[in-house]
Length: 447
Ligand code: GAP
Image (cartoon, rainbow, N blue to C red):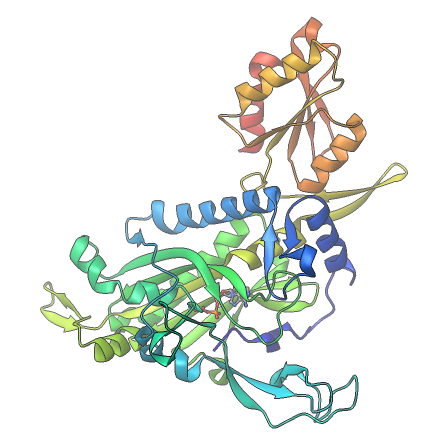
């Protein structure tokens, strides 16, 4: 079952004022982070496109996750499985049967809602009576090949996890990995959510970062504890405020059809505490199901203890989109500077789309050539942006709004003293640094 939206009900008032989401959505569009999909045709619900800064931020998130979960570990390998899979996968995994949400329809306006999100038996807006709830499967269906009948019907994957389970034997046979070990994957997933919303929080097309960690059965709960701490620390390392993050254990009646225990990493969104990532103990549910359905051996023989077993799985499953939204909300600050209001995204330097902006004070030579040379020198070492448009004040404002930690200003003195000014986004301080020392000075500040 999809993550539980009931947790989106605010438990305590959010610390940010209500219109924050609106302000953020407008900033995200204006500055090129998030656009509505197919906007010129009126959009399409539950799908968003990502502009130049959005894609940069997402790449930084995915890179941080991959570095942390795969490259810096010796017990995890990566894969990249297809979005389209043999439909038998989804029968065996239980998704055809169980990946449903209860749906009700207003008999008057025929709008459809999740049964657990409506108050009472009638539609609040028009008083129409709701139908009995029926189970609605969230998987998108399509057809493979030229014929369109039930024999060619396939699904767009609703999670990346199954691409990992069906490759379990391939990984065992082609690598030296032995439990406890993990297989990681980043990729798109699709769910026909009944009520997408809250910008990119609940989407119909989204991106997951999932790890399936295979362990000896007796160690499952130990690894669940381990991964919940690891994953919380991941978000802290991205600079997210500690007081807005929490771990919440799932109650028994909340558990997904495959889970034996689960925690959510939750963030205090403006619309309440909600799931950012799910960490579940999936037992041997998936491997056993695929073994039975495919007839292929998905056990592991441990030759140290001379025992054969189906490994159990602990799964930290994160969303790129929700991480992006969380980072943007958490970074968003409004400040009064003298008589002006400043909007600033205080991104951690490791994920900021632009780390260093290079800004000539004027478009005149020799400032222009010097600034371009400086940018070319810094570009291999940082994510840089050169900007010579508009007034310097407007350019600083833009860089604050896109979360650039440092700007290097090339001014009329630069020709004389061979130095430039480094402006800090957070302290709003300005220090003069020789051009020859810029790289080192920035490295120290960004570290
Ligand atoms: N394989 C387990 C699984 O898919 P899930 O809790 O349904 O578990 C994991 O999803 C994560 O994927 C969520 O914590 C969230 O970050 C992201 N996610 C799930 N559904 C989403 C949606 N409709 N829109 C955006 N992100 C979603």
